[in-house]
Image (tube, rainbow, N blue to C red):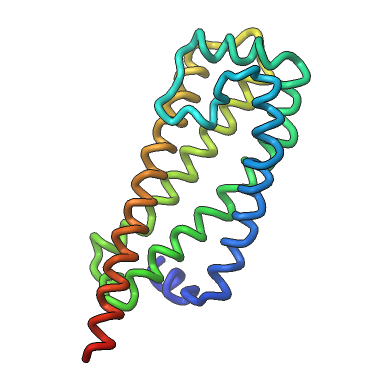
Amino acid sequence: MKKLITRNLSGRKILVFVLPALVIYFLMIGVTIPLIAHYAQGMAIFDMMTSGYSYDYALKLLDTLGEAGRNTYLFPQLTLDLAFPLTYVPAFVLLIASLLKPSDCLYNKPVFYTCFVPVFVGLADYGENISVGAMLYSYPDISYALYQFSSTCTVLKGIGLALTFALLLIYFLIFIFYKIKKIKQ
């Protein structure tokens, strides 16, 4: 796995994932999420509730969305959100690895494994997307277990994203430190 990652640490290969991730992100933030927010009448949608949500909240949101809102949530939002991890997970893995490479930290096993935090995020995101899709399809008959799984995945995704961004910031600072150190030598 380390060879696969190190072999793909070029700016061009990273951009192959970053650019589509940005396009999908801006489509969701600029188009689909505001459209769903309109149907939600001020209620936060599942994806935005990183601290989770209650069973009653899930039912109320799905009811408030109405059929048109639930259909909009299924398509185009969930369609885009299912494609999103395919772009942002490899982008984050490669970005983290590229920040570690100049300091040789990439070759430290425990540090190298932090490159896989975004994979955890992607898995939680897929769990969230699939379970939200199942809730949208099965409304109004939502099982408590399905709601719990969905809310848990949302929380795990939020924690994983926070950790990913923290790692990117820390490794960026280390990267800058090593670049400055190299210039001074």
